[in-house]
Amino acid sequence: MSRLVIRGARVLDPLSPEPRPAVRDIAIEGGRVAAVGSDLQGAEVLEARHMLAIPGLVSSHYHSHDTLLKGCFAPMPLEGWFMHAVPPNYPKRSRDEIRARVLAGALEALKAGITTVQDMATVYPFDPAEVDTILAAYDEIGIRCVFALQVADAPGSRGVPFWDDVMPPTLRAEATLSVKRAGDARELVSRLEDEWRRNTARHPRVTWGLGPATPENCSDAFLEGLADLSARGDLPVFSHVYESKGNAVTARKAYAGGSLVQHLKRVGILGPRFTAAHAVWLTREEVEAMAAAGARVTLNPVCNLKSKSGVAPIGAYLSAGVPVGLGTDNSSCSDAQSLFTAMKLFALLSAAGSRGGPHPGSEDAFRAATVGSAEVIGLGREIGRIEPGRKADIALLDLTDPAFMPLNDATRQLVYSECGRAVRHVLVDGKVVLRDGRCTTLDEHALFAEIEQLLPRLTEDLSAVRTRAARFLPYVEDAHRRVLAADVGLDRYPPGAV
Image (cartoon, rainbow, N blue to C red; front, side, top):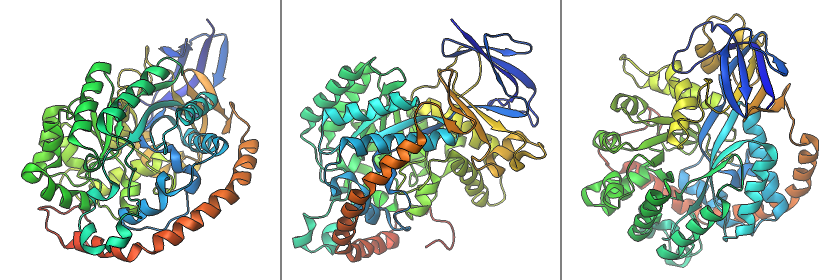
């Protein structure tokens, strides 16, 4: 078994960060860290003098299905974005496009130091061959992925408050606001179990999860079935929870006690295997219920701001002991697969809302993007730190980059100064998948050419989607104004934001 040694890097540990981390060697065998120390020997050496070694960043909430739509949309209410971006709005995509979009998103992630993504992917209409294409693309580029099919069994407008009040009956059936209904509860659970079992152990860096789109678009029977499958297979469950104020308005009306979190507890899905994505509009009582159940959250500050959804109660989660991860979300909503941006917002939004008291800072942000995200996607013992026994998922950043000159505090500069420009080498499973900023597992120029050839068809389809959505947007904006005026017992908008 060959042994690779990363020589002479400053190794930054998210659980015990040093302002100027000590220079260490990292020995790697069998895809795992074998040792961290001095004067380590190996058959192969990766020189890392004047570099900062960090655990590969972990995006704990991401969707690969729209990476080719980055830059297409201005900020708009979440429901308006749904009408433009979700896959059921578009004709079925070609295998070439599906492969290209997975590779493009993964490549962008790797270049930003992200070695693992939790991909909550929509495959509509459902096709096992499309799942195979997605997972083969992940194998090809070499990134790690926790994969979950995003599914629902109730109409997409169910979770949109005031929809029936503002939308003319003749238009209601034409709008696509979320993942479309893909079958009844029993059929869907059976299909997901079949896909999980069919793909178990077929892909070396892919593990499986479950992805009910939003509780509002899932029947009780479906959520109960997923809770059972999760328990039988020890599978993590990911769902969009309280992403927007509209979700809070719906919860107050639709669920006993006005609480979506209590509803999740009743159907048996709230627990240590459950991760709530976004989690912006929880009450303090719901935060405490999440903590008591051992449930987790993954926060996505960039897309929450762009979709006018508000700011999550970051400090409340950390104070209550809820495990917190960070995500990058959709490329068409956050526009960038960058946890550097997410970490910076995580820390600064917390500071802005602290009213002079203690608030999470750069160390909390770095932990959330590494060990925190690893925990919330079910890989807390495998990734997130550079220590013996863990997977050798490592990013090396150039300390001669202006972001780190001079090196005064590695964690603060990583969070507040770095934008991803300094990422030089990236390893996943001990294999160098990015060397000197270039991907080693695929031809980047060829991928660019493929996407250029695919773009005219996508642009044509997007134009049709824009035309159709224009008919609905006045009604969506009317519903959004009513949501903003509703009293849900809390406010997650920064002063002056609305």
